Image (cartoon, rainbow over all chains, first blue to last red):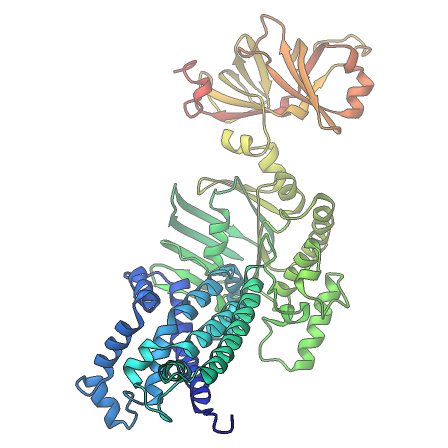
Length: 221
Length: 378
C-alpha cells in the first residue's frame, strides 16, 4: 500500500466541500423564496431546480459543458476572469453542485415551510428588522432541515460521476475524483485498491445518511 | 387613543369598521371569523387594509389616502396571540429581551428580571418555552410584549388555548394589569363572560360590521339590535306590535299577551322584535301573599329542563290563551340552582311567572332577517 494514491479522495472531499458551499449560497435564498413568496412561475422554477434529480447525469454534464465551455459567452468570460471551469477541479465542483442542488433545495424549503410564520410576525411587532429576524428566528428554526440538506448535498457531491466526468474530464492528479478513480481501477482490474476505495466511499455515505436522517427527524418532531 | 377606520375585502364579507379605543381594554367580541383577528392584524401592520385610516395617539399608522402604511416594527404595539408563539429555540430571558434594542446587556437583564417578576415567573430566565406550562408560556408572551413599553396592546384570544383553572388565574392577572394599564388594549374574544369581566368597553362585531360599542353592562342589558342580543346570550325572541306608548312605559302585543316594557323609542302600531333575558324571568313563590298581579304575569308549566350544575334552564310552556308562539314551549327561564331548590321546582311543574319589565329588550323592525318567524307581520 506504499504507493497508494490518496489524491482522488482528497480531491473528492475538496470538490464536495466547494460544491456544498455553492449549493448553500444559491439554495438557501431560493428555498426561502419558494417557501415564503408567491410569484408567477414559482412552481415552474421549483420544477426546473429539481430537474437535476431526474436528468441522466451525463445529460446534465452535457448542458453544463455547453454552457461553461469556450464556445459560450459565459465560458469565455470565465476564461478571461482567470477561473476556467472546464477540465478543472472547480468545474467538477460546479457540476457536482448542480447535481446535488435539488437535495438541499427541497430539505431547506421544507425546513422554512415548517416554521409558523406568525413567529416572524410577532418578531416584527417587537420592532426587529427583517434581516435580524431572518438570522435570529427563521434560519435557526429552519437549521435542522438545512443541516440535513447539507449532509445529503455533500454525500451526493462526493459521489458524482457522470456530470463531473463530462465537465472536468478524467485527468489523473487534476480532475480524477474518487468515483472516477474507482471506475479506472476496475477497468485496470486493480480489484484490491478498488475494494478499499469502494469500502471507504460506502462508509462515508452511510455515515452521512445517518446524520441526515437524525437531523430531519428533529425537523419533523 | 387608538382610532380605527378600515375597510378590507375578505373571502365571505367586507370588513368595515370604525372604532375608537381609549386607554383601557376594548374587547372585540363576536363569532370566530367575524373579522376580529383581521382587525388586529391590520392595526399591527401585519395585514394591509384596502382603505381607511388608523391613528395611535394622533400618529398615523395607516392612511390609504396619503399612502402611509408603517411597517409593524415602527408601530410600537405589543401583540399576544392565542398560542403564545414564544421563540422555541430561545430561553425565556432571550424571548423577553427579543424586542429590547439599543440597551446595554446589564440594563436588558434588569428589565427581563423585572418583567418576569411582574408575571410571577422570577427565576425562569434560563428555561426553554417547551419546559413551561401553557399558562406560564402565555405569561412570558405577555411579559415579552409589555417589556418594550408598547403604546398599544393587542391580545388575540390570549386564553382560549388554556384549561379552565389556568384561564381563571390568567384572567385575574389581566384584571390586575388592567388597573395599571395606561395604554389602549384591543382584546379579541368570542367568550362573552371574558369580555364582560375584563373589558372597559365591548365592541360587538358580526360579519365585519360593528354592531354596538359600549360598556359591558350596556351591551348585554341594552343591546342595540336583535343581532347583538343573540350574540350576548339573549334567548326568547318574539315578534310583536306596539299598541301603546307613554313616557313611563311601552306596551307591546305579542300573540294574545300584552307585555309592558320600559319606554322604548318606537311608535304605536310599529312592528317590533323582542328579546327577554332568561335570567330575568322570575317564578312567583307559592307562599307569597296574594296581591295584585305582578308585572307581565303569566301562567304555565315547565315542559322540559336542563342544568349545568350552577343554573337550571326551564322551558316554560304558557297556558292556552297566553301562548306567545307555537311549539313545545314559550319562554326559556334561567334559575340559579339554590333558587331552584328552595322553590322546590323539582317536584312542582305548575307555576306563575313574572317577566320583569327590564328583562324585555325592544328592537325596531320586522323579523325579515330571521326566516323562522317571517310572515306574521308583513
